[in-house]
Image (cartoon, rainbow, N blue to C red; front, side):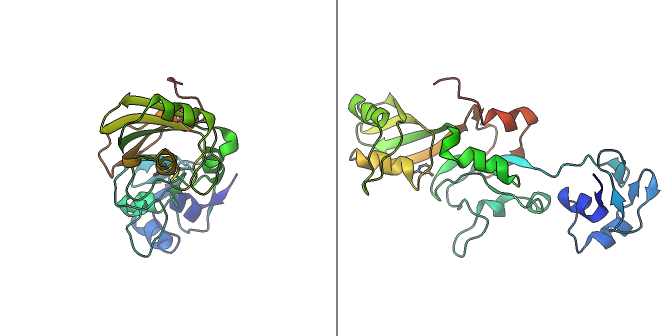
Length: 242
Ligand code: URA
């Protein structure tokens, strides 16, 4: 497959389409060792060696990241009122055309996937694919075995919407209970509404895994990193603990 040099460079986040002619002139872009002259030149990403300032650029048009989403940011590509998770990206990553593969509420934290691969995102979000999302929650009020049984049967939300069976694993029961929730769907405010249907209130929510992919605890809130090839696949595997 041959593509235009400016597409090659913009897919890699190195420049923008508009700035590509200047970038090619000023950054020492070479194709198989000879200086590139025009953004319209065609290159074969698998066969040609493209270098920028002497460093080989390995082509990828699909990009996959995990972020530790902090509270206060919305999981969207733009918003009129609030900062979005894309505002946390550096200039290069912003050029990849990333969007969140699934949402977390503004006040929620934890594992958020960002990609420009629509098929991959769709498979993660679609309930029919059974991808398990794992949440750590803290709840005002006592979580009980009865709550866990109700989750297993399928909670009916306040508006009558019936949820799929889900797992509620209580870690600590008390005035502020702690638990893990495993879901295969992602209705709006779903965990909060499931807990509210049991007469309790979620005070804190953090997503800690999607499929077998766990949040990298080395990522500070707001930090992000690319996924490895293995990790990209691991979201479609079951988490080890269920
Ligand atoms: N469920 C919620 O209620 N909020 C989230 O952010 C994710 C799942």
